[in-house]
Length: 249
Image (cartoon, rainbow, N blue to C red; front, side):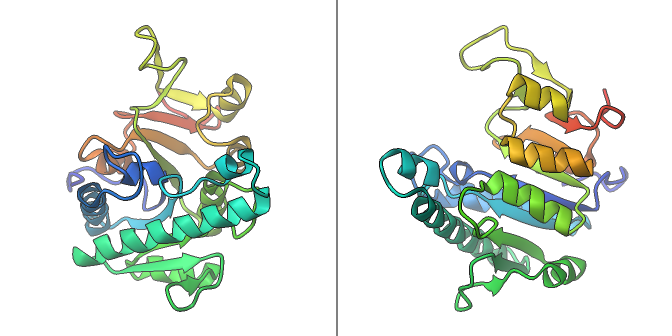
């Protein structure tokens, strides 16, 4: 849990989770103990006073791009991927509410029986009331990734940062699992990411963040307590991506 003697750097954040983050050590679907652990860390930051919004991918169930490469119509495949994010969002909502955290799922595709429709002012009001808001179904449009949805929603709710959760402790100049000499960047500019094709987020998402000077913190979700450490924003973990004049060493 964040140290109460240290001020939070960010008051309102958007946490971007991949669908794969929910699999644990599995190869498909949702691993309940992993889901519970992530939810417990979210609870800690909410109790510390952070307004938390979440975007979850759907790659643990269905990935639209993969479907299109197998001959499926790209738009249809992307819509299927959006529905997969709704499944993950409902699972995360259930895990959070079992821990006493009030949560709302807002979907870009209308499905009133299971989620509220996405309305920006409603989302902001939920955050102001201390509820976790989970944005489901991406942007509601095919050909856009959940990375882009995360960037878009973060700017719509005036989030101060995107926390991009991964399985590695930041951005490297090479694959650290294959190259023992790979070096982790502590800070990067948006242009560094685009020019070096570092795959932090897709180029559309990075460009949106760059145009609006929204920082991104890339960190390792598999280490217990890292969400809280990222919220402190002290540069101790992960890689910070931002404008040249704002990134810190």
